[in-house]
Image 1 (cartoon, rainbow, N blue to C red):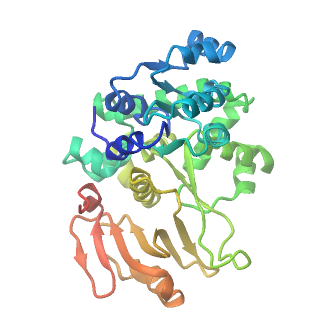
Image 2 (tube, helix red, strand yellow):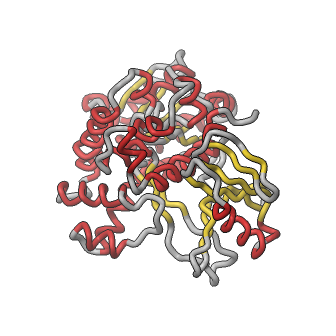
Length: 386
């Protein structure tokens, strides 16, 4: 097992709450982590049809077999269970009694927030961070890092990225989508997902996406919501000073795993990644998602933003620090260019009270200390300061 940075927080919360809920994409390591941290608890997978049928038909009888608690994997597959868990933990609120996992974030959170509000801590586990991966593969270069992505199983077992990510997507389409019964034209949906991969790091235009995929604007929105629900894509909202004066209305589109985006784009070798016109967007995707993983591993929310004004000036990432932001500009180039600082400079001039700090993260090897903004190599993210 590859050690996970969220583990200490999971242990801490299990000592404070009767239920801990861990959500995240399939194969992000939820089951492995829970079984490692809570080895004394029985493990039950609700993906098993017989187990699920028992839980659905007789939830009280099912839970009666786990009075001392259990790990209940993919809890969203038995939607009634959280209501019965509420009664159990109210009667005996022993900390760390039940550990729940799920891979459909909105569906799961609706069940949990309705039945277990105040009784469960909620954590989100995404695929490996750069730091977690570097402890397993200390010397991996940028191209292979982007190509292979961050799903733990791929690295833990040394799988071929092309094969493993292809299997991952095929399993997602065959299992998750059919379970949700939300997509009837799988071929068109797959085209939609590939079109999304071609737009990573761009502002979402649902009309354009729908037209290119051959579906309506309404269907494009429903499919994008579905991709968010199943942790395939993440949309980064724009920052604005108030609700009436948005600088830009639409969010930017990223994939939770950059390796999956590479696979969907047809990239199969590090050399292809290095030459691809979307290298900058793929690099930005990796850095933005790494920041999100860091927040989740610390128990923080998904609250991050980007800035863009009407003239196209942009800051790729705004990370909350109290009531201000750490502004991050992301550039894949290996040589620092003066243009890298333009967005940061403009943002600091227009909103001086909003800036706590700023930094440029680039694709080169060495950190640089510039007069206005520090420049960090992406490799610094593999060994962040304590």
